[in-house]
Image (cartoon, rainbow over the protein chains, first blue to last red):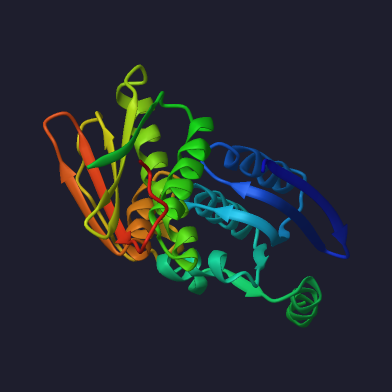
Length: 116
Length: 142
């Protein structure tokens, strides 16, 4: 499956919907989207990975790159993910300590609201 | 005994094909269903690493994968022809030290975390990454 990307804004949060496979071939498209969102002033990003079938280290690199970019603007990049096979990659690489990872968009929105 | 050999040019688009082939052969060899995601990801990581290395050093050279059913184990070897580089496996906990290029080392960390047995072997031409998983009674390939 290819990669499908979409995004919309809810209050101060930009929700990025990702569907399909994030690998060395498709990750550049996600990187471009994240860069474009930041360049347009969206500094609080929530990446919904519930429909991601596959994620490799290239995809991790893109997410880390996005996180560094938003943090440069005092922003945030957090994730929604409950899939064990995806979470396992974050655990192996220690990135569970770097990203906020939520079980649902609503849970992330609630947590984000408390941080305001 | 090698059951399948695959060579592909160093293009990111071919990595997915390599993943799918490896997963299909692993299933046929009798690797447990619960391990197939790990095979898919580890082989993808090894191939991605090889593709990036070839694109940097020898884009015209093909990458080779050997998939074997060897004495009850499913063994995959991904061979590249790029110059071997020092392998680092630091724990990426400090965001400041993470860059997109640093992620190359993440690939090896992921492979090590997923494969049942891993060897990274410098060769005269480049690097071999050999990974294996236990295989049960698969469907005979011949």
